Image 1 (spheres, rainbow, N blue to C red):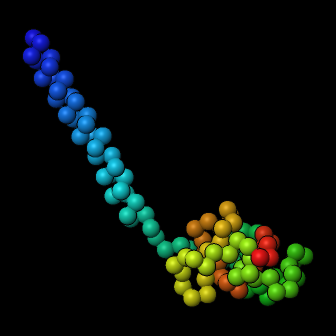
Image 2: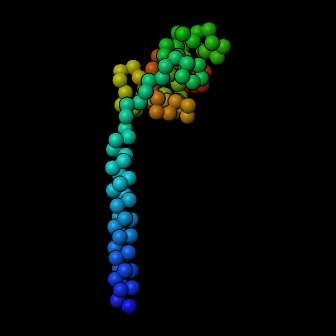
Image 3: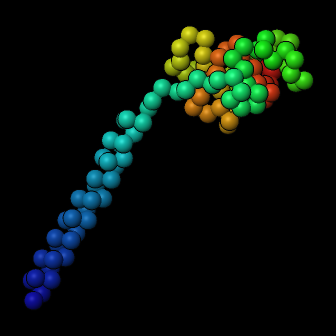
Length: 109
């Protein structure tokens, strides 16, 4: 009887260690297909965002010359089409914004 008990325990430990070893492999496989192109923010996305700062000239918080590309939240270090970039603001995560755009969360850099 002890031999069967030891064999069952060894079989369980082999299966358990194989399952634990597979976890990192499975998690790596899932992340490779997650990287999709970021969507581009549309006018009205959040914080009264517009793709062209000139369209916000009548907004009470708009300051002349304010654009996404001179905002403290601007992130030019993303792989984006010409004229687009990232934004560090939490409401614009994983969304591309136009460098000539503007929103009411603009902070002059």
